[in-house]
Picture: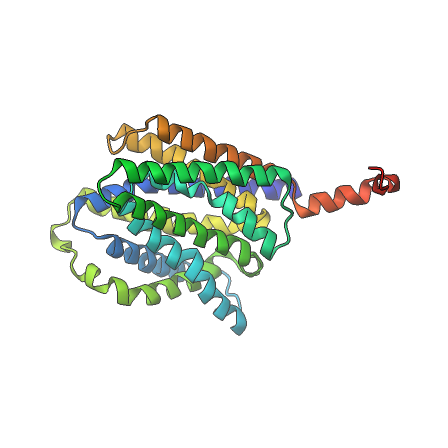
Length: 316
């Protein structure tokens, strides 16, 4: 039964992060059109997803949300949605889609560190090696962005994407117990409602400036993909994985994003993939593999209980 649940969790995350990988070049195409600013697109994601989740809740089993948890949903929304998505979309407008996607693959490394703090997950030598290797790849990518582009626009974009990654890692590690108490629809309807309200003062002028009547059909379809698939559907699936898998394992699926986004972006002529980015990607992926293959606290405790008493001798 446990294996069946794990399979469902992995399947949900695979689909969610596959959509995220496609979302990077699609969002970049929306922003390159010029009619929709990063802040406007972000607000469309928040408001559109909030409306869809609240509508879906009309057909789902009603859950009672404790007053304390309503406040926790607000804090979770700040990290998991508001800071995560706003910094990513603004950073994406400055950085290349390949850079942005590879940086997001550092999320498992950040999540591992935060899970040790919040959930007391062990940091083994394998996890430490993963942290150092993945960090080297991220730094190489950021420095390459600074040297290749004029000014600091690409570096700023890379750093904003890194901030997005850090915020989502905090969300995965710190709010797992909150998320497992409720269905994905209940959790997300509150979180996206808070994100919509909090972002309105920052995004309203950009939203009002969008020339809605003259938007091309292709642009509308791209925006619909971002709102419906890359936000509503993806965020409906992620909590399913959170309920069944460790935070570090959940964040492991970030490696799909640079793979999918890089292939699509290069195929569409939106970016190039040179040796430097290839080496940076390899370092990040090696770090991710080392982190996610390490054992959990539960696994180590179980092994210790099964081990013979003599293994605890000072001679060992």
